[in-house]
Image 1: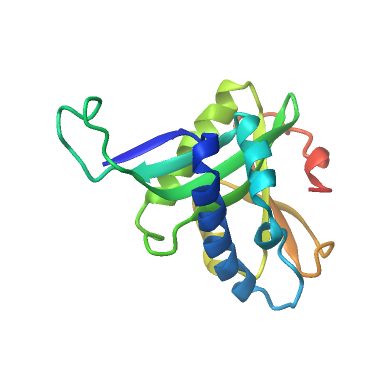
Image 2: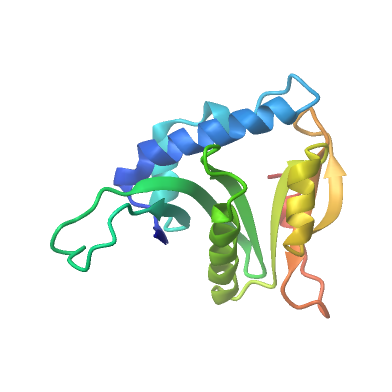
Length: 181
């Protein structure tokens, strides 16, 4: 059984661990020696993001008993995602990562869908994120989730694509606040 919920301060070390393991795979996909910021993130930075209220986790609860509330079961975090509002119309998704041991099983898709729903509830017209344009598997993943490449840049030492998901296809959201993320 999976649960998606807002991260708490108690989740910080697990969020940091998943982020590091997922982004190590991302780093290996780069055709560059450029540093990946997620790999140098500190526990304090994770806690600050958690305090924003826009960090979510997906967790597996091994227990399926009816008395879950009376007898808490130990959950295992499987993935994490964060976003920030860059403008009233635009949210920026970052540090989206899934435990490599469960990647490609739908956990990340469920977490991303949940995050997109939350962003829509905040009234945004679009969501944006950056990813390595040469990480073909990841680029195909975002295309499959109705994101499109808006632009690319080399500001981080590798070619990054700015992917955008518009919620209203008749109105283009201003995505310029995401250019420098």
